[in-house]
Image (cartoon, rainbow, N blue to C red):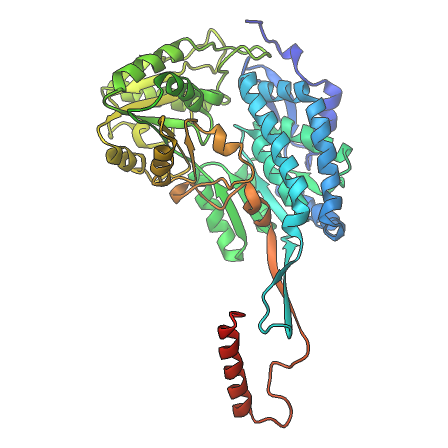
Length: 520
């Protein structure tokens, strides 16, 4: 494995200065470190509450002209962005690896998402946003249309684990809907977002339309939510509740994609080799720092031992590393606090009687924040990792006897974000999957099949969230629905000189006729 040094940063000082200059900041700064090495990566400007206020003012001014453009015109810079983004693939992959510590193959998943998602919306926004004819109050006499108007300026809050999948993937549909955006990415991973904002401006997006603020939620959170016309947030369930509380007094809408304790069910008729390989991806992609990754494995008792042996062998054979190529199967954790949380969950479980089948220890020899992919059995309810999201490369494996038991245990959580079912019988897989209380369910895949289906909505049930990304809902949530009805040929009141009682009888007779003719 090649040794990484701070001198091999993916961006020059000049480029860092240019893109960090997009942050609305009064002058305060902080240093972000590379997870691979712990060494300084960049100096990041920080925003104060007044900087957030100014960002909203600039975004509102730009949004008024932007909203007057047709959806097709608004799509043009997005389509140019997709072309340029593809052409500069390796540059953005390097940035993602350096600021997150993830393996290149997992950075590539973000690359694919930020290619396919914006392309989907740029192609479909004109149709989704076009006025739609609706049935009027009376045939011929009333013509009714549904219009989609932009919300105004969206407050966008995105996380560190998939900074451009969430940051760019959620912002572009908001822009295509005619909105401005004030975006707060996580400080640690703001470089990749700023690089994309800079590229969007280069591709023709108005300079002030997509504003970026960076800082601690305690310092700028109130200003960010207090000025927004709508909030889009991806993060923890705890933080999602706080955002909902702050949005409620202003009666503004929000979408929240929150945490998960996602189950994977391996039925007795599953292809165990494929299921074991799939479980490696499902549990350990991005070092488990993925809200839709699998943390609970439910395996039928008839195949439990055989599956566990195959899964453990695949896990122990995984290659960990920080090289900027596609060889490592897993990279580093991103924050020291994630390493601390993972270590605490595993140590507490082992102390309480859990068995480590694979992994179970930090790997400082590879880098300061590496932790081995870990499989635990004999996990019980008194252990913290049994029901609480670990958000790291740790999975617990359980045995079940019947299909009904598997579904019941999969649903035995206050979360409902993602799930996975493995079986050779696809009809059975769909039938079982439809009974799992989760916003997305994958059959014979851990998470990628649903995540990459941009035409279908994605989000959480129960305490895993409100609202959806992807599909028509992922764009239309950033709009207000307006009904516009025009009356002609008749007044919706008794004509002059006609007694209202006679008018009421006439309308009643008309309703009977309309029903008989199936016009109503």
